[in-house]
Every structure is written in structure tokens, then in C-alpha cells.
Image 1 (spheres, helix red, strand yellow):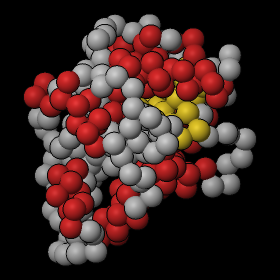
Image 2 (cartoon, rainbow, N blue to C red):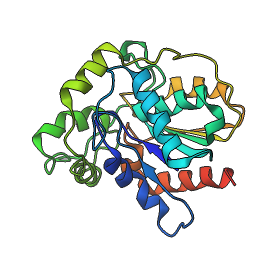
Image 3 (tube, one colour):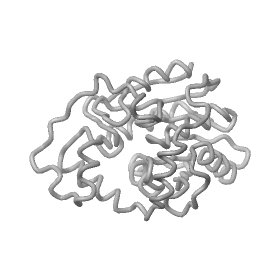
Length: 245
């Protein structure tokens, strides 16, 4: 199983999100990818096509000719969908978590996103440089979730900020975004109805490209679903895995 993380976050953070769901579940080798400019991965050209080519090469390197279970969160989901669209034979099943569909923020459908009532003092234990992002991205705004997120973010290795800024501003969109896919394998799309970053309606529209696709929208979750509702995420992940056998 290959997992692609959120933008600016590395494989260590993705592992923090996914590993609890594998407790007591043997038989799956997990590879948490550092996208270019994060973790131990060197930058490539500052465009998502180059990033996707690097991801494709990583999949080939770790899996050989064997199709992989492919999962992605946010930007990682955007890339995972792109790889599945371009090389469907490499993907045994696809899991998209709070995934980007339209990478340009102004083009995303954020209508219907539910407001979130924060627990008093929910950010008190969070480092100051993370509070703004958490306030914008989390839908389940409790101290427990914020502290869990802060602990996970602490695992993130230093990033190449200059490169990631160029990537976001110059080449964020893959060249075939919105192209029809031809993937018939099992697909699960997980979203949060409080996700103010990616929303949940574009993902439902994307479901039309997957004849064996399923979609879930959790009512009280934002952009970091695995950390906001870990028990629900574990159950949904295991359901997806069961569909692949």
C-alpha cells in the first residue's frame, strides 16, 4: 500500500494518520511517500506533472510490476487520482481522503460546507504558528483533536519552502486535470462536510468516473479526517481494504 500525504507534509505525518487503523491487521506492507521538497525527497521541476512523474517512479521502485493499493490525502489524493487516470494498470484500488479535485482554490465548490463550533480554548496547547491553519482546516474543533494534530505535525521533517511556494504558484495543476478516467477498480472517496479547504461536493461529482466507487461524507469533519475521527477512519479504511480482496 502506497500513501501520498497532504501538501507540505511528509510521509511521517501520513503514517501518524494511517498506522492506528492497521493495529491488529497484519499482511499489508505500507509505504509512506515523501513528496518532492518534503522529508527525504529532493525537489523536482516546480510543477505537479513532474511531482506526479516522481510518484510514478516511486511506485515502480517499491512495487515492481505488482499493482498497488494507492491512497492519498488532499494534494496527495489529487496526485493519486492523477496516477490512476494515467496508469490504471498500476493501481489495484484507490482511496481518496479529503482529496483535491480542482487544484485552483477559486474553482472549488465549497458551497454547503457546514460551520464548526469550537470548544472553548481548543487551540491553547497548539504552537502559535499552527493555530491559523488549524482554525481554517479542522472541522472537529476540540482540544483533543488539536493536540493530536499538533503531535502529528511535530513529526514533519523540514521542508523546502521556496520550492513548495514555486510549485503552488507556478505549476500546481496537472495538465490532465478533469480528464475522464478509465479506472474500473475499487475506489473509496472520504470527505468531511466541514472541510473548508477542499469541500465535499466536487468529490461527489468525481465519483461518476469510477463505476466501482463509493463515497462517504462525515458530518463533523474537516480537512484532516483521519485525525479528527480516527475510529471512523479506521473502519472506513478497513472496509476499503476488504473490497480489494
